[in-house]
Length: 69
View 1 (cartoon, rainbow, N blue to C red):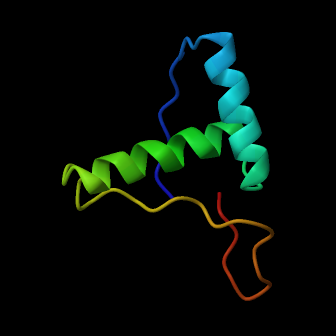
View 2: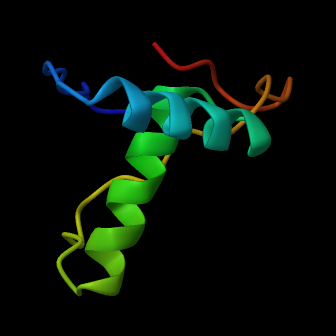
């Protein structure tokens, strides 16, 4: 998988808490929830680049899958 970019995101504490609760309900990290929501919004707006890689798979990799670097 290609390298992922990181950046600082400043959020209102109440918004962060709501995202964290939503992420917990979906069994995701807060970071993964934000990534999911951004991808979904881009897809719905028709702006998701065709070359964008999908989100990482959940859980442990199967034994027959190559390990990610």
